Image (cartoon, rainbow over all chains, first blue to last red; front, side):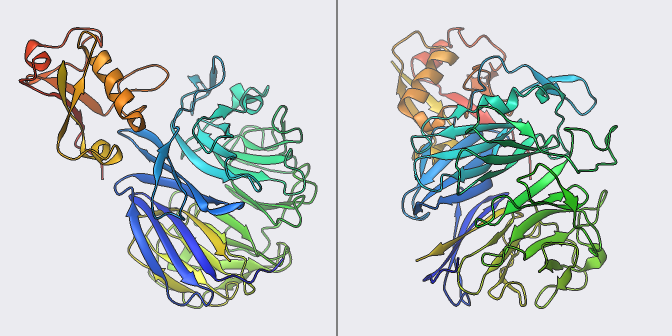
Length: 375
Length: 100
């Protein structure tokens, strides 16, 4: 599934605005546009695979709550779209950190997942955890409430960052099959377009919850899949890197020789479905890279055997974090890999991770990075 | 009647409003609720930013001031002071000065 493209567009969300970075296919020289929406938190920006100039952005603030934005020209101009995310019916309660019931309250949109085929169709994952869908380009949003009203919903608890629905993976071969993940409820899958959902957490082991193998309650940080193998899922959990080869029905650990199996990001090489990337982070109290070294770890065997990738990355006095949506790959012939840090750097590799360059160093803390391969 | 409303800078940018305030033609009895109804009708991109869309509750980090008085906790249906109604003073929507 290689792609000859004319270039790459990176969509970078930060604590203080959005930035759009573009380069030609050599990926040596980058132009930086922004900040868009200066001063606002941009949790995520993502383009439509069906119309790459159609972008959606989640813009939020503690003062003014949630704004959604749409662009029709690749991010040059934007227009506000619908921002009403009303839970279906009477939302009831989930569990708070201390185990007491807590009302379901909308806080923000964490993740946007446009349809693979229709630019007007788009999913949104929100905090407190729920999945919303729009079929009119984001003007109106309806909850896919079968997820939140799952029998386990009242027992879900937030992770430290909030009870966020942060991962949405639509099966390219069957759009009715969707995998989502919630921190700290776990992973769930629908096979009927969202009407019914089931927890897919068998094999996860979380020593910090009363029942380490519980059906729900696992702090899943991110899940990634290669489009050609939608049944193979890779997960970075609060601790443990996990793999499933049956669309999440069963998981097994592939942390192998990682220096720490805690982290947030995980992604898959664009052309090699068994090549995956993680960035280990020291947990629980520190949340920066171990030993002052920023290292991407790559496995070419689908896990277990990992190699550190360090060329061009700081190997001393580095204490940044990389958040769950802040890694992406492009689909050019030589796969590009990108990630953004809490220190405001965006690093790029045009050779699948062998060599890295900071393409910008002084942005606000990076929340998300998406890559579009332009043709 | 024209009601003057001062908005936080981020909301003026969002609504592409030049200057510090807008003048809203409020046809109902001027109250916080009817002024916000008018504001959101004229500038729909501001829906949900000053008050929650479902419950109508004021955002926690915003306050309403009229004639040097904090009226944030008044009923949203209470009539606004005469100086606001006759345009002598603006209704001020003020964001908390906080954060990093």
